[in-house]
Amino acid sequence: MINSIIPASWQGPLQAALRVIAGLLVVEHATNKLLHFPATEFFPSGQPLPTLLLVAALIELVGGTLIALGLFTNLAAFVLAGHMAVIYFMAHITRSFFPLLNGGESAILFCFIFLYLASIGAGPFSLDAGRKT
Image (tube, rainbow, N blue to C red; front, top):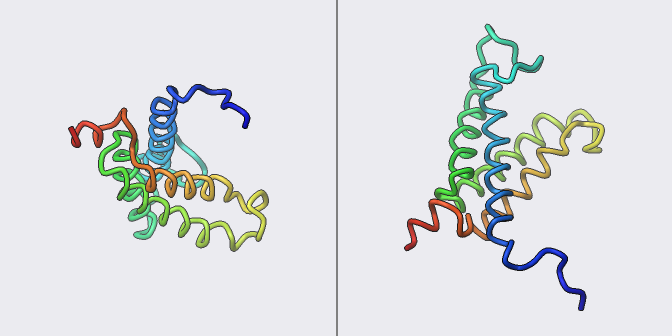
């Protein structure tokens, strides 16, 4: 059997890094929709968000923040995994079957990152870990 290149003692910190970065990236999508920051052509400022996008932005803001903090991680990650699957099938698959062509790679990747986090939890560097002690 081949030993891992990365020591097992790094598992907790790397799990925390994955969780925090994924959570903050989802929060960035929310701030783009809600605050037009960072500004993109997808959500120009001065235009009201349709209700469906407002709901999506709130799920991303709350869920991403909970994931980044490591609070109620299993539930938040499960909800966000479903959210990302819905986004993929509503906004991307209609453009093309292939994720590279339909721009859905990040939605798919987020979906599976959040499924993984829903199954393993927040890890040792989280508010969830503090709640259990």
